[in-house]
Length: 139
Length: 106
Image (cartoon, rainbow over all chains, first blue to last red; front, side, top):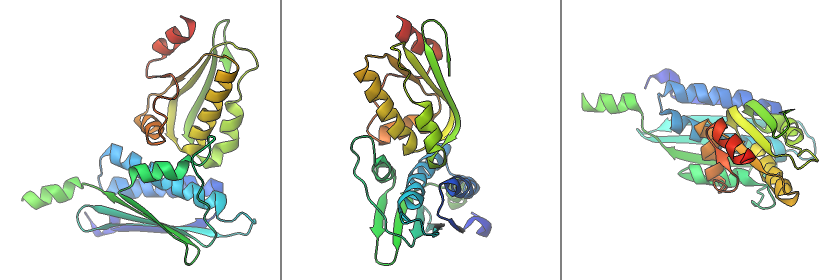
């Protein structure tokens, strides 16, 4: 893995339309890591749900806030991702067709923790296998 | 949306996320008739729980009105999204259009 793909950090206004460009940036980051296509899909699905929750519910009073995405690889096989906003995260239960987002993210991520001490930070970790690292290890 | 005498086809494509939530909800308004509906999601390259919620309501309304539905899904991301949401068996899902149409028209 080259240093140029070691981490991704970006901040955007908390708006529905900004979930897509943030997800696209994350896809580019994951593709640079050469992860398996199914792994990339799953990470994008989980993080996409957390980003959507952040822009949907973090600023219910209409205040113009931001959402920060921070992704990096720790060690050889763990992808760590934080989604941070300064609003109040609302965790909905999956009933009556609403609130599937966190259920989906939890089903995919190795771990998902929500810290509401300063704004809201959702931390996700994923077990990953990086082909280039695996090849390098056997040389 | 398109239709012939026997099946109404609703087709959505591209990335269906929270930014297109209103569009997805509108597209999945069930026709008032009880004509069978094929929901063609074969060209959906990414979907989030916006689609899951819309599918959930779409399916409930179809059951309430006795409208046969079939959902066409080709991309693995959407198929796995359904499974992660615990809805992998909630709708009649097909990977082949011909199989979906056969299911709807008998």
